[in-house]
Length: 365
Image (cartoon, rainbow, N blue to C red; front, top):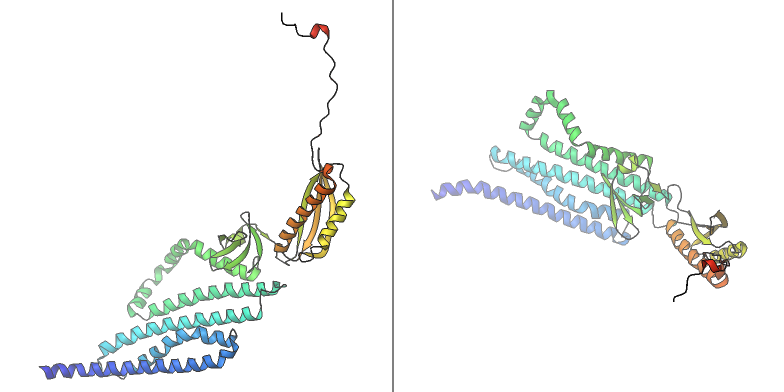
């Protein structure tokens, strides 16, 4: 009896030992190969070569043992009823690992674009355009890869293939139902393609959405993250930017015009205020780009004049800081030099005629 059991176990033990040895050998080959590659690209940290090695390491670590296992299983002294399911499982894992590698290689392309087109420079319009297109298309391709991978995996099951053939006649109705159920998802996916092609927004664009001022931080497949000035995050469906109006302050260039409004008394002398504005801007070359410096009387109300100071800056952040500085300095200038010209309410007191004898109140008795 014991000899019979031992005869049954020997093929299993030999097969397990061979499979373990093959897998261990592939892991050792992977470790040595990537250690060598890491040494070769160590002097180019942050380069495209470094990105390829870093992103492909884990998927390849799974692919190599799976390939070796699939090839080895066909040579093991095991019954087909055992080898077949094992190879099927390894094949499904290999399909998933290959999809993982493909998605990782998309990340390498993204890294290459970020290296070539940097947005941390002053004139980054082209870089933001290219990065936005690549990131949106990368996420769309990732979704396609996942869908194709799941489809291929399901098609490896003969039963599902047969069910799919029998349901082919009702595919039109099923597609309509699925389309209606996933309408918002499909809408956002198509909107993502439109955003990538028409570029209403880009990474790092300055926008005003739902009354909030912020920058485009992320563009995902179905939503966009806007980093608001106070570090809150506004998450908006990507279809919003196709269907609703919004303000984009950096659509064609980053430079902006800033305004400061002052309300002063009619007695204010305009020319000195205009000269003070010019002096303030000249002293603010870190924020002012030197292009526009205008002070105009833009309205006259019942009690005040409206003065508008117009100035230009290289970007929205500088424009905001410059407006605050100019407003503060002009108010300080008026307080110090023309305090009587600040807004005030005038009243006129006229002499009241004395009351006649008949209108005088009776005296107390």
